[in-house]
Image 1: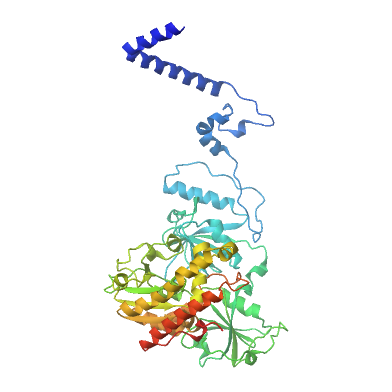
Image 2: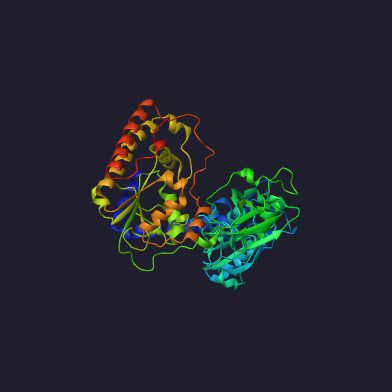
Length: 564
């Protein structure tokens, strides 16, 4: 046997072409045998039942595990539709399951619209699709709250958010934008114009360019539309010319907070003002700024329909902010011409830079840029995040840089300073929990927190000192002052940017001030993470910054920077 193998080896060395020919024939024969075994016999699987309905045709055999890749398309085409997880806020309006749409050319715009329509039919037990509508950035079709997600937007997510806030309609636009409202105030558009796939769900359509795919939400409970999410703004003196300041009013003999809030919500106004038996609706304007609150006892007149509620008086109005979004400050765009100067929005990390950007964008109507690129911020609507910071298309540039070369790259700056104790904790939460998340308990108790404070606390001081030293034209804004007196501080910031501040627009910003990146205050540490040694070190840095500010004839740090 060994001699035979040696002879074969010598033979194929002399004639290699014959060797490779035989090898190819052998592999081809093996492949044919494998294919025949896959299609000729049907393996028996205990407990499995198949019928003609399980495949495209009655004679198609079962495809075994080894043929999964070949049978995948057919299997997907014949799988039964699986309904999505339903929210508790929808009541069923249809007992019959929705029929599947026929397969088509998924590469075309028409087939995308068909797929979206098929998805809408499946969702009729939760929300009813009512059509494609025209939208306008200056006068929205749905005037309630809105939010954007340029990465993960889905039809269900938009419906869920709008229903949770008690709205009757949910609309999707541009594949990633969600708008809520109680009324649809626009004309229909052609279905072919709602042709953009959802960013987080390719199988469904999410409107188009200035086109909304609108759903009517079938709320399980009427009480979901009550004023549960209306915000109490306070007690205010009746404005001099109330018919102009609050243009819509209604006499309500059986007055209650519910009724007045519902009335103003239906009329699409963000303010609801109760004046005894009269309900007034309107916007915050220079005639009614909501800046001078009165003692709530002046409004403490019982409602006619609710014994334990106050409904204000003819002279002192009890004001609530409804769920209706004030759209006077929601339009944003890039600068029409290239900016001649680069303005920095500088801050230490955790000092509220993202929040300040949100306020500036609403106040000016222009996008802000960034020295960096943060995909999560871009996906949430900060469209200037993707531009190069020197592009000149944005009103100001976010930066945390503190070196001389970087600072001198800017022509002027808004320097945002925050209490270091709060800023360090905010940045630590962002680093380990994301923009609106929280660091885990293990991070606070482990080595991460002490190391973080040791590295970042000196930077808090040097960041401010560097900008004061190398910055060409620096406007200092304290985060705490911005929270306490937003209107005045935002007016200063907009002034530095060279924009004529419209007071009504700034008043609109006050009603929309939180934005999408406000960290919830519900989850707070139950203990003080700062040790005495940390506090001693940070207090030294606070005194250094306070001295530097006063040497430049600026107000020092707020008193609450120093621990009590």
